[in-house]
Every structure is written in C-alpha cells, then in structure tokens.
Length: 317
Image 1 (cartoon, rainbow, N blue to C red):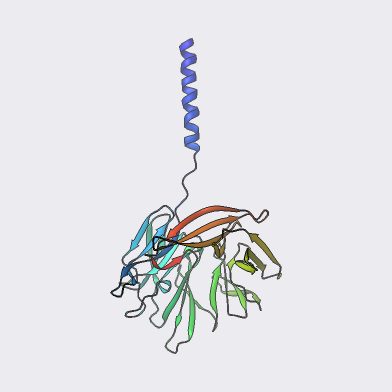
Image 2: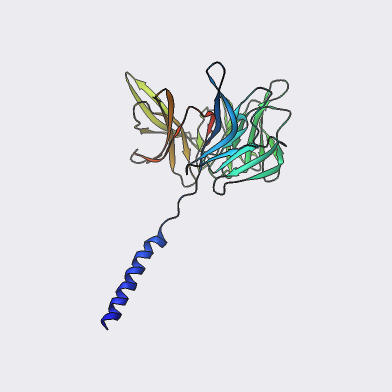
C-alpha cells in the first residue's frame, strides 16, 4: 500500500512539473527592427554605403537580400526609395534587381513572396516607398520627367492602382490597413483603402500614426523652457478636433522620434539617444509602451544601430 502511495506521489509530482512547461507561452514572433546597408571605406577616409540590402530582426538575426534593387540611377543610392518596413515590423517591401518585381518579406516565416502585378515604375524617379500593416498596400512616390511629384498606392492583391491628387503624399495607415491618411501642408484626408473613397477631409496639418479608430493621430513633440525639455505625445481626433497631450519622461539626451498604435489600441513611442564609444557613434533606439492613464513608460525593445550601417529605414519609415 505504501508503494502505491509513493508511486502516486511521484506521478503527481511529475505531472505538476510538466504543466508549467506545457503552459509556457510561445516566444513572440520576430519583427524587423530596421533595414539598411553596410558601409565600406572610401579612398578619402570616409565611408560609403555598400553590400546587399539587409534586414535586422528582433531575435538578433541579420537577413541579407542580395537580389534586392538598391540603386535608382547610375551612381546614386537611396535606400528609402527601394525598401519599406511596415509600422508593426512584420513585413518589408523591396523590388528585385533582376526583373523589377515587388517582393514582400515576412518576418514570421523568414520568406519572401513575389507580387508579379507590381513592378518598378520606369516612368518615375522613385524617392519613397511605404507599406501598410498586413502588406496589402504599397505606396510608390517619385518624380516624373517634368519633375512633378507623383504618388501611387498599389493594391498587391490584384495590382489596382490609386493615384493621389496632385501635391498629396500618403502619410500613414491604420493598424488594420483599412484607412490611409494623406494630404499636403494644409489638408489631411482619410481614405477607405480598397475603394479609395474620402471618409474625412480636414483643413489641418498634423502628421503622425493613425490609430485603430481610423481618425485619431498620435505624434511625439517636445518643448524647451529654459534648460529643461518636456517631451509629450499629442493626439488629435480628426473627426471631432479634440486634442490631448500625454507627458512622458525620457532620459537626458534621449529624443522621441515617432509614435505607433497597434490593433489593440496600445500606444508606443520610439526614442533615440546617441553616444560616442571609442570613436564609434552608437545610435540606441528604444520602443516604450505608454500607459495613457499613468503616463508611465515600459520598455518593450531596444537596439543599437552601429555607424557602419548606412541609409537605414526604421519600422514604419
């Protein structure tokens, strides 16, 4: 009888030990922190961008894309024109150097898929590429032969093209990709993606990240009073014109670069701080999640971009 009790105890203990392991949460899927190039020394002692386009991931991997197009004209290099990383870091878009076909690279799978319906626009001198969450829509911005700026938004699901009005630029997509904010220096317009119908037009200039409600924009800003700097995130509801400010406390030398919403309504802020270490510029970027009730910041990711990486493009551009 005693041996049965002991056996039962051992069995129960073994089961108790294995339950937490089985219930342990899976590691989060990696995301793309930034894209860019390495750099090579020049004869004059400086450095120039070189090597294949690369993606730096949150799990520490560096993925080289040797087939990605990285020149827009002979002798000219503009990384922002040929690669984009979505706001959430889940996807990157670039063109093949061989045939000019658009490729969408997915961080969760580590694989790229070709989009034959979308190719490099030979009639434009490209200067910007944007990508929506979910990677359905790609914005192609460039100048035509008359040096007029043109932006087209392409639906990668079928190749349908929407050309923005003259002077307009695409600024941002909502986290679900169902709305896009665009405009010029005087007007902000919200479009329903897919149909490209205008949902809202406002005579206001405020760029930032479009929230999951499809109307609220968030953007970091700062003010300097005397020797002190006050950082904050400003939000504006384009439908009601309601504004609010969220003060945030950053370390000395740390500057807010951009704000970002996710589908669940969380608000994050990206910061940068620079430091010289033995002659090398260390560019530290940190993502914080903002508690809008307490104004507290919780660090969710941090990474250093070495000075050897040139022309880098952060998630969300």
